[in-house]
Image (cartoon, rainbow, N blue to C red; front, side, top):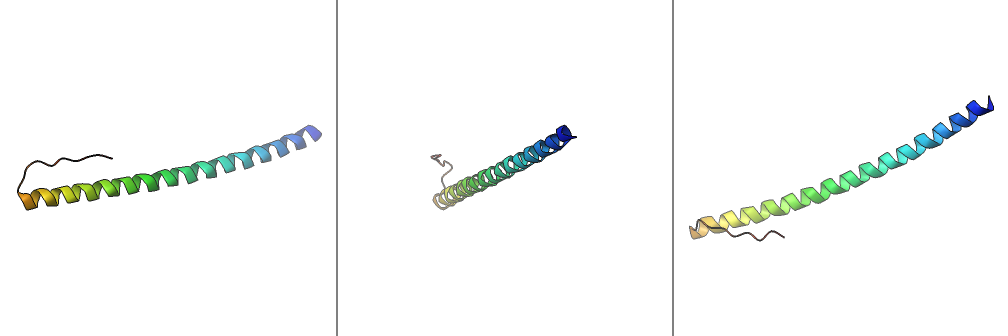
Amino acid sequence: MKWLARKHVAWELEAHELQKMRDLLRCNLLHLKMVLDWRLGMLGLLLETCLKDVLSRGSEVCCLEVV
């Protein structure tokens, strides 16, 4: 019976550690999503600016410097 009680405690600790790792992974994924959303937003603004420049000049060439 003691063996079973010890196993139960070990499972609870393992479940707690897994939950902590899951929470950390979720936090990291949310941070990555925010960074990617920001980068895509910046790229969208760059493209919009370039298109406005092309349309205002009547030029067909747009040179983008990707940062």
